[in-house]
Amino acid sequence: MKLTYIILTILLSIQAYCLEGETNKKPKFGGTYQRILTNLPETFDPAFVTDSDSSEVIAQLYSRLFRMGQDLSASPDIVKSWEISEDQKTYTFYLREKIRFHTVLGDSFNTNSYTTKNRGRELKAQDVKFSLERVLNPKTNSPHKSTLLSGVVGVKEFQNHLATQVSGIKVLDEHILEIQLVAPSPSFLMELSSHALSIVAQEDIIANKNQLHANPVGTGPFILQSFDPKKDLIIRANLDYFKGRPYLDAIRFQFRRENNLNEFSLFQEKKLHHINSIPRKELKESIKSSEYSFFEKPSLQIQYLAFNVNQKPFDDVRVRQAFNYAINKDVIVKYVLNNRGFTANSPLPPGILGHMKDYNPYEFNPKKAKRLLLDCGFSFDEKGLVSDFPEVKLYVTGRKGSTNRIGRMVQSNLLDIGIEIQLVLQNWSNHFGSISKAEASFFTMGWILDYADADNVLRYNFTCNNIDNDNNSSRYCNPKVDKLIESARFTNNSKIRNEYYDQAQKLLMKDSPWICLYFPTTYILAHQFVQGIQLSSFGESEFNYHNIWLDLDKNIKK
Image 1 (cartoon, one colour):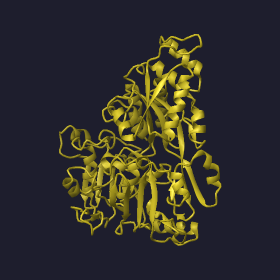
Image 2: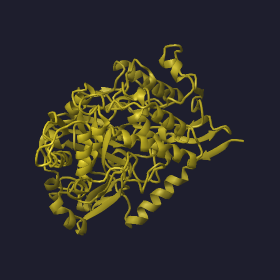
Image 3: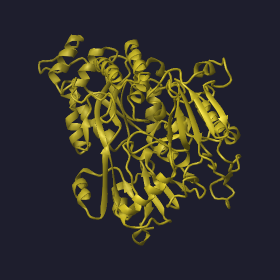
């Protein structure tokens, strides 16, 4: 017997009715939404996306088999219904019909416009197969090639050039796709919601030499209008979107770091519709203000400091443990997060299976830190401070903002035990490059989950085979941890799965490739005339601009 899940289109009507009921106003069409991104997006090609700013844009330009829903489960996107075989290893997906790719990017009256090679044709099951195999193909060199879909039958043969296609991904009909797994995987549907697995058109991939950085062609609710790296990115409504055209006419993204913009001042002047960062001195009054709407949820995100475990002095686990004891995470949460988050005790955030609520392996304890450093053979002066620790650099993203403040607090904590560190401040591109080239041995990082499962944190960041594709930035490798993570991945029993994750995390925290700092909440502050907001625990990377609409009678200043 098969388990069948049918998604009825009537749910969309119910959602629209609820949206109207919540506001007591009828949604209106029109207006350009103004938004600031922290960084310039790294890419518009889903196969290469690794940062949250790129993900936020890609989510608007493309469609996927599934998206992450408000309840942190896989919510159908281009899928109409699906079936799972009794042995939980074969998935049959029935796709929606009359979903069309974008026809023209830019302004059709402008010579710089791009007419897509697919000519606005209908999306078919073959497009899904092509898109998934493109990410897996070594020639594409996607950073996700060894993580996503690795449990699908035939992936290893395909990647080792023993087959020209993935045998476990089959097109059964124009709108029917079958995927076979090597073993049951409870996180598989959520894995299919990853931005990297967005659906692309083969004709445009070929025409653009196997990448879509310049001409992002998808089937999403918005279409690329213009992109000026020194100014802004504008995307316009897809009038032919299969779920109905967006209420907004367009979204304009500006780039804070590139343009040195004061986000809160622009918001106060009504030149932005929402912001996700509020200055500490403005926080309390902003939340209470009747002019604004405040939305907040626990975030599926962790902010951490990472070590390259192969580089001195961090190749000694006792040094890494000492640094863990030396950092006051509670103070960071209070003064950097404004208490909008929780001190992290492990890599897995609250809200997902495997989070260890009462586990606390590294309290703030400078005495333990010094004792470990003494065991390592370091010397101390008459004041009880380390006197011969080597020069250390902490690589930090951004010259301003939260990571910069974290860097200075870490610098102060370590100086309290006699360790001087130099801060290296750089933009995200250079920061990522320093880590990838192994120039950085100690650095700030954050991880926003792609899907709501422990597998997305632990397998991506801590398994041996992910060192080469830069996900495992610490270069950490422990075969015992690998075995536990892999066992959990293919275990349907949630109790046993949780036990595997507990064991894996305890080994990880003992080995200390990271200093887990905090789990932030995700929040936004919006003007009252912005309607239809549904905040996700994934933050803006899963922000549903399709349902946003503006009360144009009180609209934003031009």
